[in-house]
Figure 1: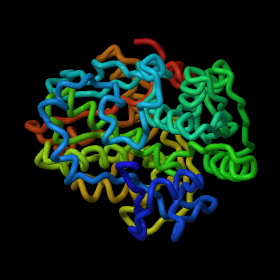
Figure 2: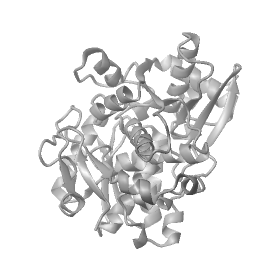
Figure 3: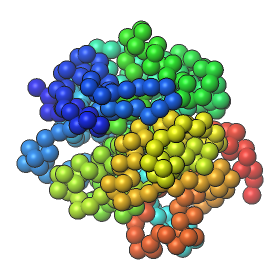
Figure 4: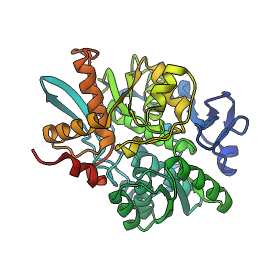
Length: 401
């Protein structure tokens, strides 16, 4: 008997966990659509009985948990952790000291540093949960489309757990990410096209060959995995969560996961309000920003130095937009020039080597401070989601002092 169900983010219909998982269903059986160069429709979310959980879980006990060990709160994740040995789980642990405080130009802010994760990116949060679910279901082959980080993450996590990974990437993938994927022993398939093309090819071949699919948003567990950052922030801050969180947005799953995590904390009665979520994009990949202006999606090929947030057709656009709206946040785009400038300043001021997608949130933060759109009394947090060593070419552009 499972303690969760699946619910469609579109039509709101609910489905039993056994029906979805035993039949390898990814999108809503009623309204789900995965069309080329379009956001997914009928994305499923995992829902729990929060009324019962409020009786079972205690905030003061939860706050004593170690950040980065997501299996310590099994009632809030759709995996049977009892099926795994402690040595298997500890291989997936994230650093417990990710929440850091900085003061630059007399402005204080927090960061969540995911650059030290097992494969050096935030994507390990999703890959770990997907890989464990695959093991639970008796699956040994997992496929995913990626601009680099999700692919290297899945490849590395699969190597740790003895699974096989097939990674579909666009031809312009940064060399460091390609090398990382291959070094882990994954099967690399380079698609003659962009990320959106790689996503579609991966779906087609996964269906044909009956491989488990990790594609972001398409697999509901990617959202579940990425919500763990909200819990890590909650534990690390001892419940004193930030007022504003800057999130780099490509496909829109990180911001959807962050939102879901905090929404669950709200449902449990452990926080009083949601943090405001600021969705940050590059002007060369700004589908969410444009969606807020026009209320409709229009496909436009992405072109940005920040490859981790490069997506012409953000697959989780609709959930990402809802996360921003429901948290009273907004979306903002910064130029590649602003991103590179921010990357250099952030690295030299913090000593944390971030990649361009992470630097985008610092660029947006700086921009909003200059425009006096950020309150000096609010607690701001920047999500730093990927290590700079994953994109050597961008680092070379920064030059010396």
